[in-house]
Amino acid sequence: MGRLDGKVALITGGARGMGKSHVRHFVAEGARVVFGDVLDDRGEYVAAKLGAQSCRYTHHDVTREDDWAAAVALAVETFGRLDVLVNNAGILTFARIADMPLADFRRVLEVNAVGCWLGMKAVTGALTRAGGGSIVNISSIEGFAGAEGLSAYAASKFAIRGMTKVAARELARFGIRVNSVHPGGVLTRMVAESADARGPAEAEAFIKAMPLGRFAEPVEISRLVAYLACDESSYSTGSEFVADGGLLSGPGY
Picture (cartoon, rainbow, N blue to C red):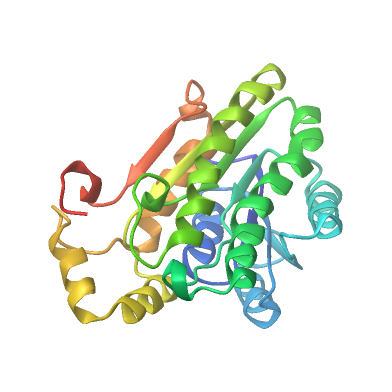
């Protein structure tokens, strides 16, 4: 423990699922964390459990520039600096292209892709003033391969993958590293809801396609995110880190 001692991190979508795991793991590794979400009751509960000395919660809609500015300001005012951004917030809508309303498609892109872009834009100044830092963008294996019913989600996750590479080139001069993480099946509510939408046959096939034969626990992804946030990964930028139980290693997906 202590891999993130002295670091101040901003984490989005931190009230539940993988985001909550990231918040808890970062605090356990010594970071001070500001995290946001739109699920205020859950976010405030997580913050209360971890304590004000270690973390603060703020209402944060990642599609709103004002919310981004407020979250960055809270981190700097509360903990004196900002070193890390984890762009974790995301939504998933399962519908085939022919059946999906345009508004739903746009909403997924707004939260997942535009929200990520706004985050990188919002933190650049604070990270530069801190002498550099790390941005970790949470994409997905759907940023590499498509799946039926996930056109909007895949589009947003491919976008995150591309934006990460552009940002890595643009921000390296300021000492800011930018990488993307691509989880496969993780035991969260969002994944469970997706499995329910696909049906039991597809869910079973998904698990069988994994060489490791199981879903990941959220903390298994959080450990990878913490590695990319800390100085141990100092020569990694513009890179893609896959944590999928081997799913993409063969033709089964």
